[in-house]
Image 1 (cartoon, helix red, strand yellow):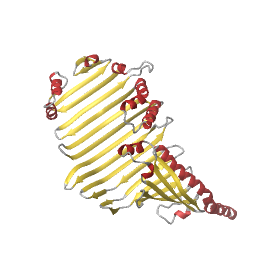
Image 2 (cartoon, rainbow, N blue to C red):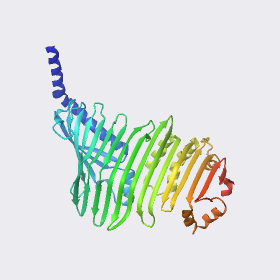
Image 3 (tube, helix red, strand yellow):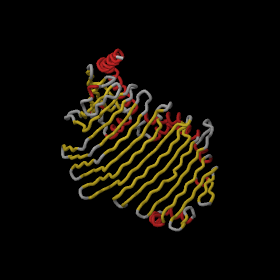
Image 4 (cartoon, rainbow, N blue to C red):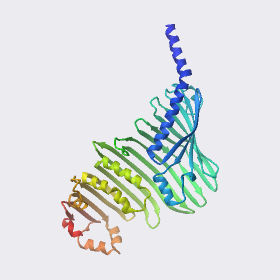
Length: 438
């Protein structure tokens, strides 16, 4: 019995005293892998290791994250032609890693843990702007590197305030959790953002709260990820002086996607409520949609070409680049539905539903003209009388459509029910051959 106890003690001593030096190297490699994986996924960032001082029980490192050539850089150059990577802000991440299968040196600090893994880390952020003093980013990132290399990170921002150059900012507690696995490419995230208020001169921006969560996984098709996401924003106000210019009282959004064989399917919902819009007042927007049968390989190719062409200013050149993929996407066939697409104004709610089904066709003979004859569609729209009268008052085409029966009054609303099948368009029961529309 005593011999067994001694063996256990020796093993524990080895884990605590010997493993940190070995695991420290693995922790360094894992940290680099996660940062570089995140940068490669965005395609917009460049990560470089500025230093890494590895000790027996703990190590310290610093990484620089910069914007590289890509869509974001192209957008910045479009806004200002003299923009270059050397003149942009750089995010500097300073990290201390307490390593070892049992990271005992992490116990004495905030966020420390004895949970087995490659290490427990704490990171701080700083923004460096060429020619200016560095700015420390409030908050701390606490991370745990799992035995398999997965990185679980929590950004913790305690309530506080900051004033600089005529700008005052105050915020409440915020917490964001992200788990990344560079091996599988899986990402999980959730966060709760507290109150944020920024005042600069006569302008004030304030956020009451926001939250989000979700999970994403890559597929065997480059650039195509699937998963789910939820987002909720409660109260966003933008004001100038005493006049409140706009207030977003509520935003909720959710969506999910999945891979079914070689096709992508998914659904999404968005609700937005706004107050104080100049000349309008209150506005609410509701959308529920679903899709099925999108060819994943074509979506992958189309996405890559759009990313490569980002920043271009020639629409026809962009269309020529993606034309073949667009035609292949429609030739393969898919379904796209708006189960709800409503806009609420003070005068009432415009309600609409739309469903589109694109039949599969021979890609070698597909032409845009055949799309009209091989598409099935249904569109239902209902507009309150008060709104329709306001729209039609100065719109002669709308008046003609009402007179022709394309828009029919039914009680307190004007309705339009349109169907398209086999090249025949029917509006409120009246058939209209597609060629007659051109």
